[in-house]
Amino acid sequence: MSAAMHVIDVAHGNCAVAADDGWALMVDAAPSAAVIEAVAHLELDRLDAVVISHRDYDHAGGLVPLLARKQLEIGAVYISADAAKNPKAPQTATLLAALHDAKRNGRCRVSRDLDAAMNPADLGGAGVVVEVLAPTFATAMTGPRGKSPVGPAMTSNTVSAILRVTVDSGIRVLLPGDIDDVALAELQAAGTDLSAEVLVFPHHGSNSAVADERGFAAAVMRMVDPRVVLFSVGRAAKARPTEEVMRGIFDVKPDVYVACTQLSTGCQADDSRLPAAGTPMAHLTAIPAAGRLACRSCAGSLSIAGGGVIGPAIQDHQTYLLSVADEPMCHTLRP
Amino acid sequence: MLLDHVTDTPDVGIVAVLDDDTDQAKIVRFQLEDVGVQAIIADLDMVPTLESAIQWIRGNANAVICDVQLNNLHGGIDYDGAQLLARVIGDERIPGVLTTGFKDDVGMLVRPHRGHIPVLVSRDETEDPDILVAGVRMCRAEIDSGRGGERQTHRTALYIEKASMADTGVALDARVGGWARRISMRFPAAMLGSDFERIEHARRSVGQVFFAAVNLAATSETELFFEDIEPELVDPERLSFHFEAEQ
Image (cartoon, rainbow over all chains, first blue to last red; front, side, top):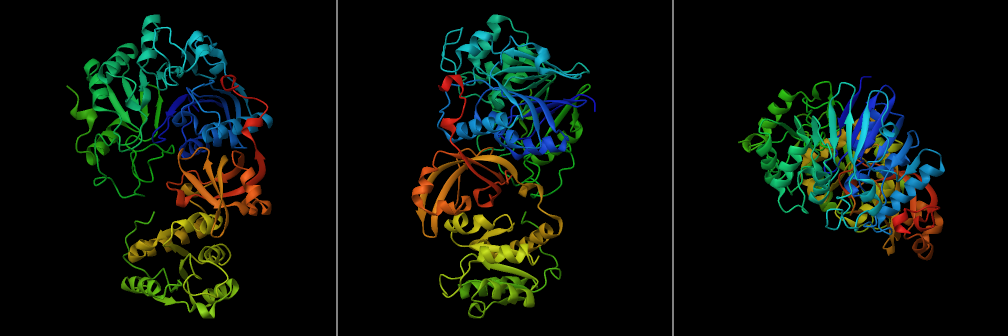
């Protein structure tokens, strides 16, 4: 197997898997059966590490069945403490129970050592290099509800771990969790290098905590300078990515390739043009996708290696998109 | 998915219709006959026990459309439609579709058998023969080839958030780890063991977690089922570790 990164269509949420030669890393685990199905499809009986960028349910909820899967060995789970989470909430209770169950049965160890001071060798393997670019050690030790070094109070999103994964061909994928403008200001102040060829855009292309979405998106684009921008989104009533985020992206890089895992309602509001549920979606990769059966996927689950996105084929994705969407934002909003 | 269009129906064979509402049974028969499917309505007086119903179906039909409620309007029936259909599908390998007019039945009556019953439709949907025929075919496919990906189960943790008395016994409501965050799944407490049939015992389990295999690709609560239940309850507040920030 050659090194590749797979961004899984989990509907709203995030999950990415990097794999190479018997070694594998998962970054975030959304509450979607596609997470488990992807592990099975990729024939992974071991994940060397699972990194949860932050403990919001759309990034961590799928960790519960992943940990509970007895036929899967996990080297280590890296997950931050989060004082903003109610320890008595059902999602926290199931997470604690699953972590405890996996630890007790020797299926993984659990580490809260997740910050930019980590040694890349701790997470990488085979032909894949994994860097933790944020949070800083000081920010991680402060945590959500604490005060950011640049001033405002931090949320769970602010302290998202930012990972940059480089597959052996040299292509770099940036996974910034749900970082907000507070986190971005800290990164700018620190002069952190976020450059990458592929960006999985933070917070699914919208951030209610960011007043100026267009400016935020433009700032992210300037720092990352990607050739490809991916959105891990569900086909929900609240359209993601937002128009403002898309405009900010194209303000900086009008020719960037943009793909969403599922068809945004901002591109096609109703389902009238979608194929009937169950219709084979020939343009998708074979990797499980949450939107495949109901034909809600757009690019579906994507694979990245070599020169960039190797699946689905860009032309096939574009042909499909134009066949189902009246106003695809990645076309109509380009200057 | 129930979206295949009916073009030809000889594969469906003779369909047995069971419903304690005879008017509703006639509607279903009429709809099926409208697309060329022969349907026969069961005389519930003749099938008062589960075994007699199974025997009658085995001798007279190739498929079943069965309502959850068989006793409400009729009386004298010692089983419900979910119990019957689970046996018919699981043991007799005869395909069927379960129908219901009461959402409340899904948790307490259908849930324990949902693993055997791939197709549950609302009473409104029974007026569409395409849905009924497609449902029979979908069930046949599962009998022949096993569960599709959307019905595969995966081990996960479930959080018990409520115990209450329902018409048919003690009910538990649980959140499913790795599934929709805000939606609870109702089921008979007895599924966790006979002790849970006592409300006092069930109430003591609130706030605790158990493990079971759940079909996590379910798109609605009515599709959810679980199996391979691990009866040991875990109290999250008494685990040997906590996150520092939560101490």
